[in-house]
Length: 158
Image (cartoon, rainbow, N blue to C red; front, top):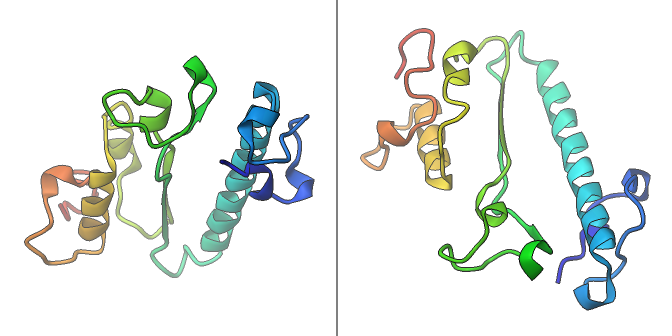
């Protein structure tokens, strides 16, 4: 089972009470949810540290951070916990994942064009093609239609 309480330092235990075991049957829904929220809080902190690190170099170098979770998580909705259910029965919370793209100052990504895609449905498959396109990898595997950044470069790179 999940050991959310092991995924953050004690200083990030802001949501209380928390589950201190990976045996879900020994925990309340509130304890499970709080431990998970603390893990998310720490992930948010870590990503902010990465961005701040990159900002120090973004005036001189092209800096970027891509982050995407590998899966969503059920925290007791309809009696379901964790993840990994077949797609046809998995609830949306397991299939909708967090993702963030941060771009430094020197990059030619037009953020206004990218904002127009905020409500577009993307999958992990898009991430693969976006990375290939971003780094201008020349391969037959690359599909511009699956690249999230297609038509979002200010110099018409795509």
